[in-house]
Length: 447
Image 1 (cartoon, rainbow, N blue to C red):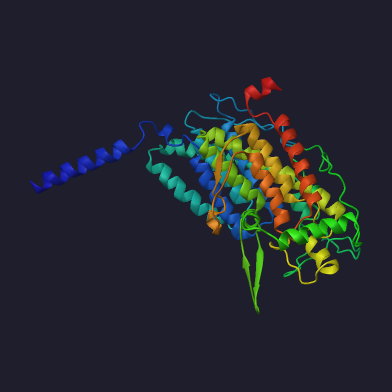
Image 2: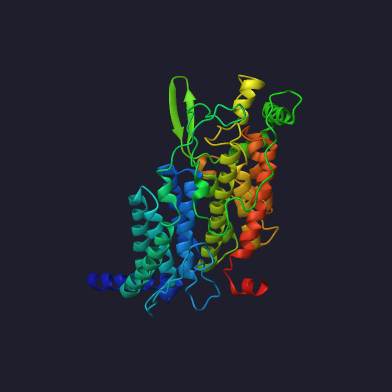
């Protein structure tokens, strides 16, 4: 009798477990939750490995492109490949067997490219293995798993080969930035006095822009230390805003800080605080928006790929101007000409002032996301919750970009022209990308 009861219990348990499985393994990955989870892991690793904002944008871009290229292989969808559209991205043919499960292949491509571009490979490998174990438990057959991984790896190899030709590896051996003695020129700032990062980023191949300076900003205000000059008044504006900062302005400044390596000094103790990059923040917004809109896995792959491309090209355009104008930061100027004890709210980043990177890439991303989801798209930005900050809500991507841009004034690290002109470049860039990158048949018809 006891044996019979055990058999009955085991039978009921198996029946329950079977009922929890999808009737068709091809329903296991329907939305973008697995790619978003992989991106969350990639963000953790980017923070852990302390990649600079421009380099982080490169990691997000190639990884997201790989996942999207698999989505574009789906004959049942209407997504267009980026091969032949992005600068230097040559077309390739991929054999798709009947056993291939494309959502899994897309995920495999994401994992392989992401792993190839980071330092802490074991962190991504661990996440991949846990994800694969979960997917196998949901009934994906062994032959399907193997065929899907093989296709994903093939697409990833093509994207990795593409990435190796963007001049990034060559730029690792380029000469470092040489500090100038000109009074208007950028100088390293406390507490670490770090050297200027990525002074040759404008030599990295763009994805869509015809050249790094395709959308030139107006030149910065002519430097002057005279109190009746426009430049002095711009510095004085930064000084006064920080001096009279409201709580709301302070909250905005810290929410959009996105400093990947902030150094804190307390007495004789110095310690680092690692956080998300500006591009990582917008990739987080892209993921949140995709989830809010309940996109399927292909829509999520498209959203992340297009946003990452906008951010990547945005950094190249911005860094091109930064190391041409090489403008002095407010902290250096104010300490020398207005108040030697003044400190900004945020830690000054280790690169020239003009234009504002946040302003450029935020607006480029916002225009891209607006093109995907429309204006007036409400979303809750919880990207910074992991770093002890509350959520912020926005009624459009453009409003979020406006707030990200002005946060640099509140933080005391940018003059207004860098914010206004940077935003203008970012908007033009984002709008240009939306017309140049065709990801859907309906977009092709409208263009």
